[in-house]
Image (tube, rainbow, N blue to C red):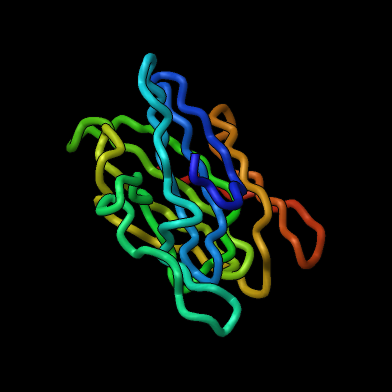
Length: 168
């Protein structure tokens, strides 16, 4: 409940978790984590009451900026100004120093980038962020092949597929 315009969906079976990306209005693109719990009411992510974006029209901003203050689920990450958020992929790896960690890879149309959000093992907080920029491109889709250890990227301006090796 309370999603505006979902773009990317990723299901993490071990955690029974749906990770989704969605466009906000003018700004406020979001990454949301929906932990599925049996016999619990559906979580509400706040649209069309709460958003970190603003209306496109020249009108007074009607959106509440805090989600939690009004009983909604806060986005795990929001992008304002908008990045034209697209696909999301989650990769979990074992790190000899810190144990297990997760990285969310978020592609963007407007910003022509892959945003990398490294999180703790339980996906409760972002530990670090990075960005990989592709000059003059729109990244429509992103898939990861764990056997080949590569990302396949569908570009938008010049219809093409890119292959990007994942470095550990």
